[in-house]
Length: 314
Image 1 (cartoon, rainbow, N blue to C red):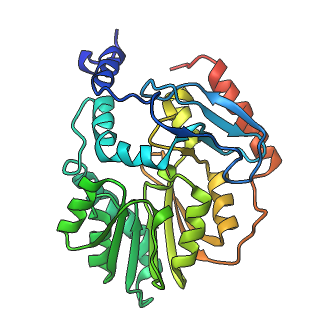
Image 2: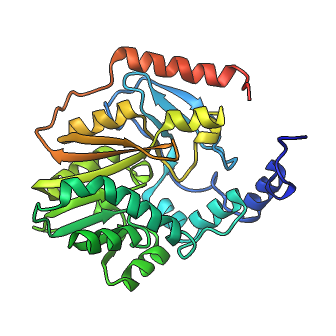
């Protein structure tokens, strides 16, 4: 067939590679979400019964605000174990190529340059000195921005092998989750949450913590995997779900999160991969009742049902 996958990348071979890892997702400790992390609502509906790896991960959508999240979700300890030894092998098995702390660095250098260009007009001549990179992986982005903008950078990440690479670059490093980070009286001029917000265990609490540690004249940069772009690209909701992402954000839900946490969006940019949306933000007074409109939420769930039930045309 003209559009058939190469044998090495066939769905059957992909499933075999994933199965060979022996990761027992079903047997991992999990916790249930009593309410939506964004709006606090409890009117939820199941939108997927498995993830792209084939694991029995249920995703629920909040009918009040449109946030989608895995529920039940792995506990913090289970995710710590996952990032120590399962995450990169799993992603490698899915893609059929080695993806580890060394191989990802070239890609991260390109990302650092592209996102640095977006950030530059907001940083130059502002006198910024410090940076906190949350989920900073191998430290490539933090190191590049520190060099380009004259910043002293700190990197937080839950994956020890990736933090070890960041440490080699001379960066201050913290192994763990932002939800547990205790900065004391420190504040940071630039806080980055690059390719990470979808991995957080509690977005609302994390953004509140970020709001507390960012300087009042500072900048917050964050990007999301746009859930709508992901399921439309694959024409499958399940293929857009993956256990390494507890949350699935859209432009509407991310903007609501930012406003509720106390951030104004200064610039929005759409990545060349047509999948990520980036935001440059400044601290502001929180709008604690901010939510997507009723019309936007209704349209979102109509689209989800259409993707579930209408055959792909490509």
